Image (cartoon, rainbow, N blue to C red; front, side):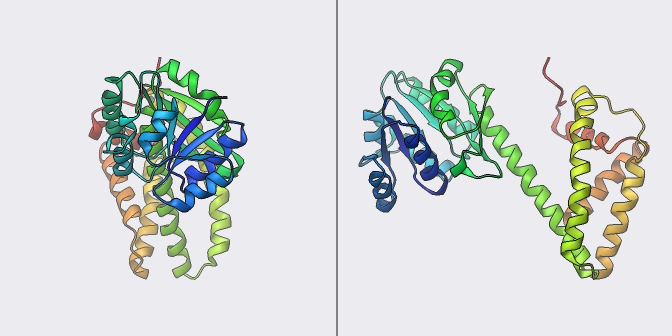
Length: 301
């Protein structure tokens, strides 16, 4: 097996690198923290003094870094990968970064004959150590095929998302939705607790309803949003939904509970009702976002 380069041995990167080593790949590593490098060396890796040295000695190099600033520094900085890559090099960034940055890095690397991929990670319920990881890999298809055995060594689900940067876009959209859901749940639980409800009981009841709602969303998006089919009436439409959200907001005002997400949801529902969509499914609210962005989210043909 060829030696794999790895830069960035933090909580995620260190675990990913460990799984690559467990799969039998020799490894050269670099991190700005000597203790992280020493731990990897104790487990069988070779140490490098810079990212550039990793790139000089390893044809395939992975990075796992905190964000765009670190990715730019490691890839393009004075001692970065750019100064060690060669014509057969393949650079794969696992970080949550910026799609425009990875494309700019690709243009710099391409001039030296090297290839670039982004492959950010979504961690599943069993954790990184157990390879409960979805890898969102994008870039040249031949590069993906070349890197896939290594990606398989630390991810249980490897998805090829297409052109360079699309993996990062999916990761950012996923994280946005995930955090937004968490904040909305927080508003509901705090509202209930201040109204005198046992918060654990509230969460058990809420969890049951959310599972039902998620399944309904998965089905309804396929038949409504992704087909542009918004006109069908619903048994529980936007008008009735807005009534319930309004009642929750009114309770929050009485109890002095700040609920900015709920207030925004109600205002969006009012806009839809003013357009005559009261009897339509709440999936129709998606149209307002499409209009604001000037795009239609439809299933690829």
